[in-house]
Length: 279
Image: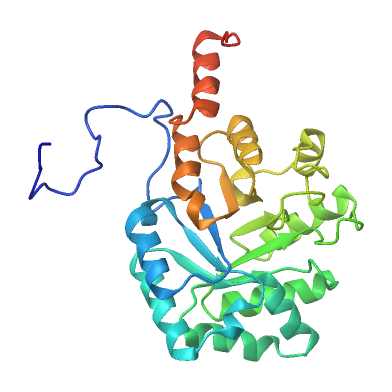
């Protein structure tokens, strides 16, 4: 086996094989974000993840209220590590919902900054926020110097807000200065948002949700399942914003984006030939 030492930094196959989807952007990205859902990675696991795949991660969300369970010094160290790889990091939206229920929005946001987080998620997946309260939360986060991402949709699959209402929320949040709006998909990807009970994508709901939206790059689709990732890439291209990606799936998702996986290589070939690829 040939041992290669002292090589300059480069991807392992650079100059040998070209990505089929060559339009995939690199960091710092204006679109095509990948958000990782972190449900409890240790410091060493986080460092290993970032060393391997930091180039393909834009946001790490410490899911739901998990950040409340960390030792403060360990949490600050983990946040610093994440930021050193030019990755934004934020606590889960459900945790902010708890703070708002307790009337502690301003204290929560100030502590978010003190701990070193770079972003804030404003959601009402479980509670209900009026447009005025959403506005207050968004502006409080922006005023504190945080990137504000909001989320629309409910976590309870029995509650289906009208798409027109979600569309109004998206327009409202972006108008208030939110950088992006997440469409709820949970970590299961089933029976919520634009997904049916089996995790299939309801494309007619997507088109209705995006009707008259000037910039579809402002939307982040939570896509924990492979078929959802593939469907969004097929619909919007490799630079679609994808969220709730499990840490162990980062390279697999990036391969989908670049056409380096059979599912999206087929899409590339179909577009090149303008006809379905035979089996």
